Length: 112
View: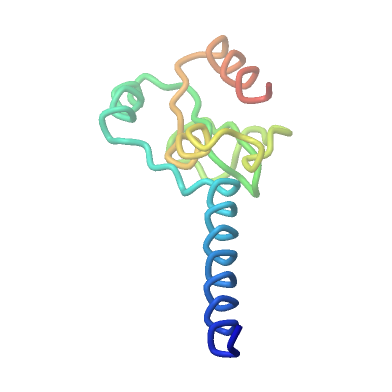
């Protein structure tokens, strides 16, 4: 086999390996999930009656008294990085919670 053919074949193999590696990486690291506005609209409708809000704080899920509050009431041990991508996106936008029973239920769901 000639040297030029070997070089061309090796180039094709390297390109195929690089493509396969990039596709494998994409399958492991999912793209940033964006919550459609129609889905988040059901949460936004409850913002006026919400007693608490779940939002991120230093990489953890935190409970805030109000939507505009800067200091959380409590910071949970639930790491944002361990959540499903949809839950991460919802926490980033802020989840309104109407009462303490719903708060405990959501925290239990996020923690499991």
